[in-house]
Image 1: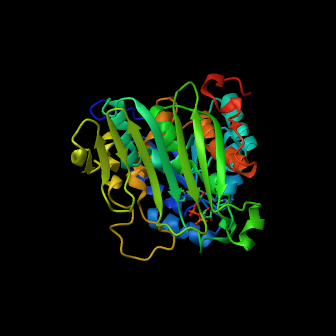
Image 2: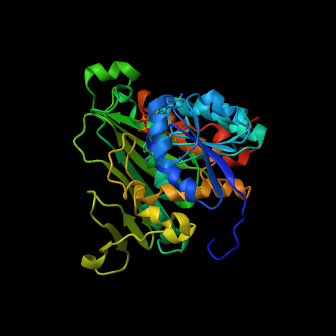
Image 3: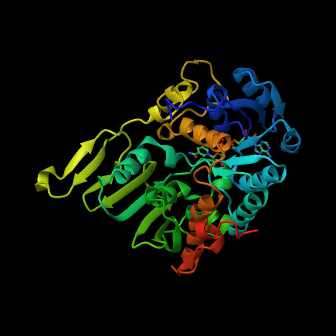
Length: 386
Ligand SMILES: NC(=O)c1ccc[n+]([C@@H]2O[C@H](COP(=O)([O-])OP(=O)(O)OC[C@H]3O[C@@H](n4cnc5c(N)ncnc54)[C@H](O)[C@@H]3O)[C@@H](O)[C@H]2O)c1
């Protein structure tokens, strides 16, 4: 991208939800093809605190009013999980492009509604999945794309987080219902899509939490069969009742090399090379950064947080992280709109990823029954949903 002449078109973007969402404000302010036009959240004091800090003039406490503003081209949604799909649908219905943080939706029906609306309107939707733009994933993908891994034979991943003490709507949340962090890298490495899933539940969370979502399992462990491929992957996910440090992981096993993400935060990755003498097969490797793929104005934010120069206490600041993914996410969404190309993951791809999690939980409740992904989540059916 650098070196090529970039378009000088600018996309007027609005951000709704300003906790995690505020992380993206300076990225759109500095991106050469974006105009950070408006922000929205319901609490006016907090809205003004964020708006004053970042100098964003246009502010809304009502999402419906924001959607009536004809100047807005696209909305980046960062509200709590249950609001994503209704707000994405409202955005598309208002004639604006939409991006949402993960997951795309909480039901199969909501995913289908978004896919249909994208097809009917010709507008774009992107699920802003941080793992797919983390340096750790980009490194694994590069190893695969350049042929270093050889033929991939198996992929596995996990997303383990102890949610004790988080807002109470999380208590008892079915683990696989919010599994895009571990499902998306499985499918993203090869660009494949899921055909069917089977999931086993294991262990039991505390009694008071079970009733909230009718979900008893402490861990859900899912096998995903890839479509038109000899590959399958395994992911597991837990939220309550397990003694484990936070971990997102991807292990990809190729015929020539295999990459394993670290067991413990802060350790280096391990690259295994087939054919070497046994003690030398496993080598620790430093994962490179991929800031060079970005416009120079936002390159610094792969390694630096948006609040790093500021020592004041900001009530909305969440801090950077997520493998330096935020500037990559903002960039690819904006460029998809500027260049009229599909973002990644787009509506169909996001629906395939999200439905793996939703259906895996259903499978676990039915003792591991195999469940097929719906037709509307498959790329070959693009254009047939509406
Ligand atoms: N790595 C990642 O991808 C990642 C990391 C953090 C959070 N998230 C996701 O981001 C979302 C937000 O997380 P958070 O921790 O910032 O939550 P939060 O509850 O701290 O903040 C939510 C924000 O949305 C606003 N909001 C809620 N409903 C609204 C409405 N109807 N209209 C306008 N504004 C509304 C709130 O005022 C608040 O600013 C969640 O879905 C979470 O899963 C993703």
